[in-house]
Length: 396
Image 1 (cartoon, helix red, strand yellow):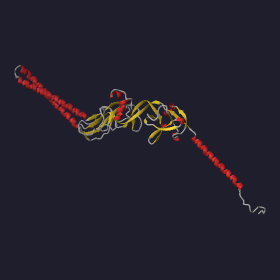
Image 2: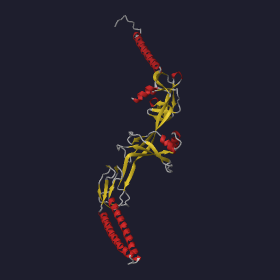
Image 3: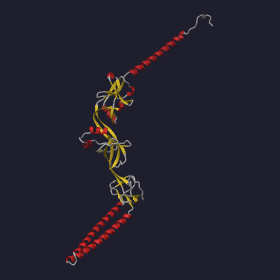
Image 4: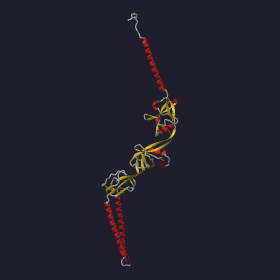
């Protein structure tokens, strides 16, 4: 140890503490500067697309559940009794008008026809004998060999024989008809439905079930119902003095199938039932659709889509809206380019647009995108968006 160092002086490392304090202050200053810069960046207005609302023409669609039926759904029933001897077709097959479908055992009816023919032959023979008798007696009566009474009796017998011949002919014709009923043919062209009977089954006119149902589906009927309010709206909306006039003025309707696809052919509403159903409070309409390719079948279900053209409404893109508590809102640009959220009651939908009757009006400007970064009072830098560009984008 150096003896020259004073032992009564306490050692303090001041020259080491001063640089450390300076470094700490520098770090704090930089942190404060970074925080202040972030706050200034967050408060700076965003550039967001803004759309000006204008009245436009729009088409909305009202949809109603529908059940499909062939234009002719014909129950095929036997007209004579007997065992089902042959089934010529299978379920779901397409048949032409006049094509044989079923055959009932015909032995009984063949014998009935033979018996009727025999009766007719006997009646015709009796008629021949009666006419011979009349021919014999006529000259004898004229020559006053026999009395008129005998000739009158012969003429009466002739008339009875003629009546018996007519009756026998009717029996023959009836037997032929019954024999013809043993082969059941298609009354129209169409598709065979379910066949609940098998060969050997006993069938007849009293059988509760039909042999099958034949559906002519060149045209298909779609039945749908309107509530009382919808019917009143239909009467008020469609031009015409009478219901028939209004139906004729209705535009073509579409059929949405059960898988959500739209049937290629459009249909036409033709008739409406005469009264409301007391149980359901609805009235039934019928639309007819062409079905040349047979893609639709009786028993199919779907929805009838009826277009409704509005000449001047406010359309709001769905992308420019957000939902909160089951309500639809938009951000409207107010004074000083600050946004304000407003609820918009949706009157309908047209493609990707909402039809709006309240909440916003023509000339209002709404924010089109970036809604998740906004809140009431936020200031933005608006960048106008042309409605035509949105339409073009929606059609891509």
